[in-house]
Length: 182
Image (cartoon, rainbow, N blue to C red; front, top):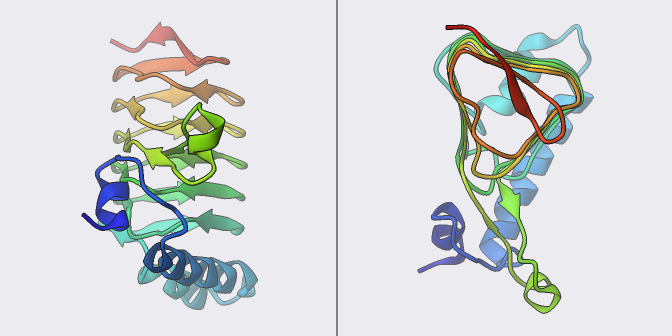
């Protein structure tokens, strides 16, 4: 099994694998081009990301945007992100339709072993899914393995470390459901 195959499967892998380094460099270059494109050139800006991200429709991302690989990110139709979105996509990150993300949001499928010796050469990840019609407030962190159901609002500053059921308003650190929309 290649290091990329291990990574995508959520197994421990070596992030210093030459092929993975090459793929990250490609993504970093695309993000750099996106972030450095003047605001009066929206098509050129969007084109910088079109080879990285999988989109099911229209999307708009404000700069600055950062990701590890890009090819693990799937955007539903009508996706919007405010400034400073960071997605560490060592595993799949999937967004439904009509997802809106506030500024300074970090979404990380990546995680590391607790053992300090293992951590020096190994990491692993778990997929993240955000359903349709979700609003993610500013300064939210969504951690590896989390699923956020449809029709959810995640309050600003929350740290989402467990699944959030559909039709919920959730806030806090750790993020907890405070209201159901049923």
